[in-house]
Image 1 (cartoon, rainbow, N blue to C red):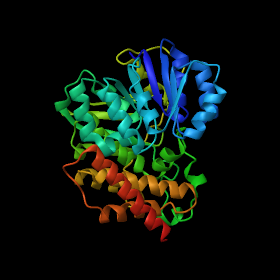
Image 2 (cartoon, rainbow, N blue to C red; image 1 turned 45 degrees about the horizontal axis):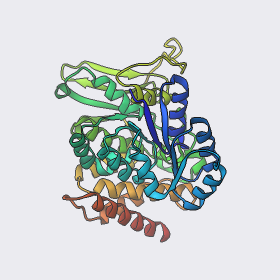
Image 3 (cartoon, one colour; image 1 turned 30 degrees about the horizontal axis):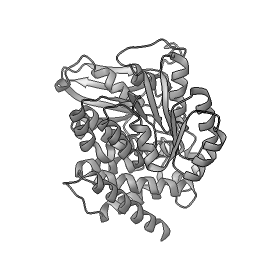
Image 4 (tube, rainbow, N blue to C red; image 1 turned 180 degrees about the vertical axis):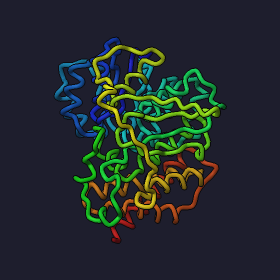
Length: 384
């Protein structure tokens, strides 16, 4: 069980819900917090949880925060150096990585090298750098505890069972706000439409990824690395009720699933308390009311991002990094009304088609692939 934690991205959806868990169960000290720009919320968190240090990406905002907190004994840093220092903070035993995007790769690496366990919510870390991350985890004898509800479910279903007896992993997806829509119906949808997720309260970027099914594609890649399975043994099923969070089918045909209300605080808590289960007041399932659970295959003709993610991981090397960089760029353009919803997949595909993959790579090569893909995708968007 985690006793002292760092939260990278404490003002985002996962970060704030992690602090909800800390309030709920007690017994966990918050030693370091980081945020991007939301210093108003970060200041409130610092005053409540009294960490030893905090960091924001912009130095100007860091200085404002220092002035506001002048009466507290706290160290305020900025930029990637600050993010890394929080990740390796000496007295933390567990780092909750809840920043969004490839920016989480380097701090996660450094935390692992510093001997920290990882409560992983930043799926891009394994999407872009899965092979290197898993190698580092083994070398430094640390643990990764998945925070995503689906990967937490799989993790729980595997406990006590031999992994080489798996027939397949069943990764469930809500289908997002556009489930059942045709391409014609999606031509003119807006970011506001895409942000209306039917079940989950998530950050803006993740919610758009859920609408496009890219989020599920990223989770397929993450599952491959987390659980050491072949990508062709991971099946995605749309489950609109979001009650079955995922399942594992063993070679004898038995399926073990993990169920719960769609509440991210439950997998966050398990990542922090594993292997213990701790009582909480979060919502519990009423099976008499949840009496209809349905499943269907995803529509990959309409939602092409899922197929592109499978293509990227099958290609291997630095291709998943390039795919992810293009996706982050396209999603940002869509959120800022510079790109249509269906154009997200087109930008990603054209970027992948033009990218030259590296198979023998380092972290620096991943950074280079990410930068190339973002620049290329941005050029495509600007030319539209």
